[in-house]
Amino acid sequence: MEEKSLIKLRTEKLGELNIKTEDIITFDEGILGYEDYKQYVIVNFEECRPFEWLICVEDPMIAFPIINPLPLFTDYNPLDSVEEVQSLHIEDRGDVETFCIVTLGEDPAQVTINLKGPILVNMGNNKGKQVVLTEDYYNLHHPLVKT
Image 1: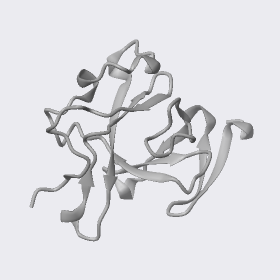
Image 2: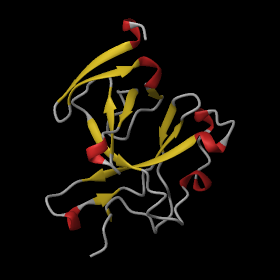
Image 3: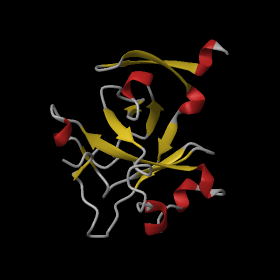
């Protein structure tokens, strides 16, 4: 691997990371609340699974814990609920991964998942988009663990 294809990111919570430039995901519209930041990378650590981290390349202090919601919510399929995903240039729906931002808490019962604003990533071309679902039964702070 050539040295120029690696970027060093210094993060607050995860330390210094070396990422490959080909792993950078471009969000043309950014993430809600962070619209000026367009480039992110997904990082996973064995000890954090099933959670992963969506880290901003332009400002690595911006990092979101994310999770693939599909194994936990089997009737959740945001790709079927949105129409404005042309920007992802989807050729094969199998290339699209779904993630949701998680809000962590001290107590597992406080951990919530944002089912209202999923993040869709076309892994085939590294294009990402956060969408807002209009259905009333999805919410921003859905409990991840039922108590």
